[in-house]
Structure formats: structure tokens, C-alpha cells
Image (cartoon, rainbow, N blue to C red; front, side, top):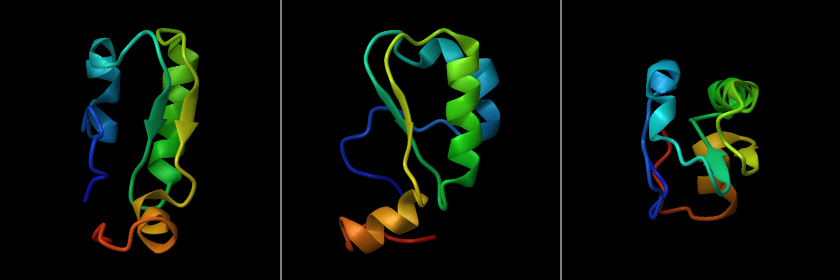
Amino acid sequence: SSIGGTDSRIMHLEIPSRLEELPSQGDIVVYCRSGQRSDAVARFIVDSGLCNGMIYNLLGGINAWSDEVDPNVVKY
């Protein structure tokens, strides 16, 4: 499942080899199903030092987004 209007969809295990695809300027919101994997990815991006914007983890992930913001987003 995904949130409409997002720019990239990169699986968490692919982040180390695809960091150059992330914008170096601007903010990034990282999300997964429950927020646990995306938390690790957000920390990795911050530690990489390649992005100058804010890095956010969507707490509760896509399931929380579906519950609290848009019930049309399918949970998985």
C-alpha cells in the first residue's frame, strides 16, 4: 500500500544502495506498515549525512495513516 502523491517507493533493504536517489534538499518522510522498519531507515538516512532536510518517520506506519487520516488507504 502507499500514500498518494509520494515521490519514491524504495524497499528498506535497498536504501543503502539507493541513497543517491533521495533528495539532498528538502524533507523526507519514511513509512512502512507499522513504523518499525521505517524508523531504522530514517535513522540510517540521518546517519548517512547525505540529506540536508528533516527526516521523519511516520509513527505507526501505513496502518496508522489508514486508521487516523485516510481509511481508503489499504492496510497490509
